[in-house]
Length: 102
Image (cartoon, rainbow, N blue to C red; front, top):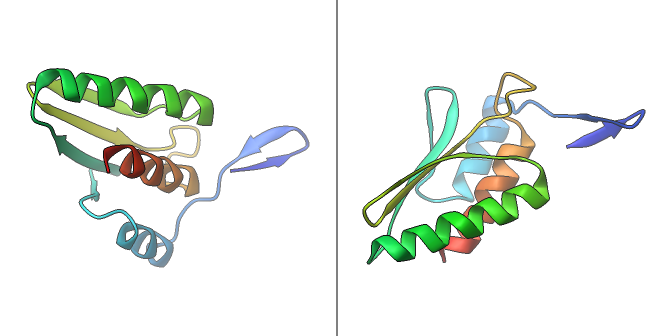
C-alpha cells in the first residue's frame, strides 16, 4: 500500500509476485480471485477468539477480510476491492493472519 498525494494506492500483484507471496503463507490459496484459507480449532470459542483477533488487527491495517465462523472453523478470504485484484495488502493481511494462527 502506498500513498500518492494523500490517497491510498495499491500495487496489483503479478503472477510471479503472487506465487512468491503464497510460498510465505502455507495453506493459503487463490480461490475465485481471492486469497483464502480455512483454519481449524479445537473448540468454537477458540475460533471465535481467533476471528475477533483477526478483525482487530485487520481494522488497524484498514483492510477487512470476509470471515465465516463455523463450529471450530474460521474461513478467511481477502481481496482488494478498490483495486479489483489481489494486491500487496492482501498478502500483508494473510501474513498477519498466519502469525495469529501460529
